[in-house]
Image (cartoon, rainbow, N blue to C red; front, top):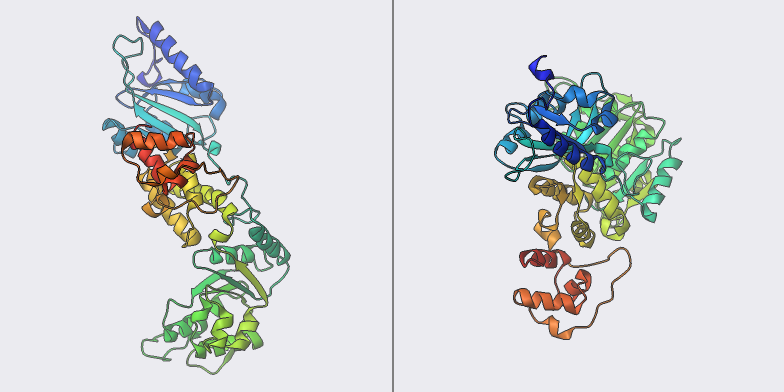
Length: 463
């Protein structure tokens, strides 16, 4: 029998070791987890029978004796694989993603935890076991927490977002010009892409232009194109975005930053459906649908003479406003969960929030809206060592957020005037908790600190 096909337990005295391993496997199986034993050469000594239920009959027997890299990929377990190097350094890692592959079965995306194995002296465990790997189906991870929508990328369960979803549905047969408004970072481009994807122009291109990212001269060429010799450096003809977006949608982000002379040209396009390239007098037709977006109050900009009133009304055929996160706090949890899954997946991991971390996220006002939240979760994923995002994994400004508009029932504060003075030492913190019956919400409010700060102090104090 080839070495790679040898049974994991075939020597004298292996019966006790087999019984121990089978017992552990059964315990993990009761939790729906596959248990692998791995030797120092990173070959599988044992794979629990639950593997057959996970990816197909015979998988457990086929996996025994194989290199772990053959099952879970060389990127993680090859000679220079990330997890292999961490295990060799004696570290444990949780919530990493990989595709489980065994010959003759269907590959399956899994979340895995891997750790060095340390047995007690005199135990009956197989001395060849150096590492353990625990697998679970990746789909068991947290999902949108009930905040999904029929439109990919748009997450929310608030009445404001439900109104937006209904508008998108109502626009499915329309090619009307749309104006999206809302604070920076609220997801206006994601909304624009959803409108395009559910419109009669879904088969055409979606072309985006940030009107505030280029100076006027370059922006004019970017939008309308130019002919050879139109200006210094124009060595050949170039099609503008209105031509490239033919049959599709042109998304004009930060439209309030358009210079006045380009506002005139854009107005003509909307009125006459024609335009001219820079440096030529020939009119060209365009049928690109326009979706514009801005974080500026365009009515005020019109009053101040910074934006043309006639263009404002041409763009505002169908106005859609996205409120900031602080005004739709019921969307924060499903959105954070969705973003965490997306960010973690980019890093090959599967993570979830601890209750205290999620509460800290709910307490924060998110002035930068969705964009700030995604950046905060990028940070959390980078520093998180386990499978669960803890409060200390979040950026400092989120950790220190004062309790605000909490979702759900409020916890009444128990009066404790004496505790308003600074709490010193473990005993002082313990007295504060006892005075509020160990309710962290009430204790944090009484002490004038955030729940994340209180939680951190409790951990430091061993409470």
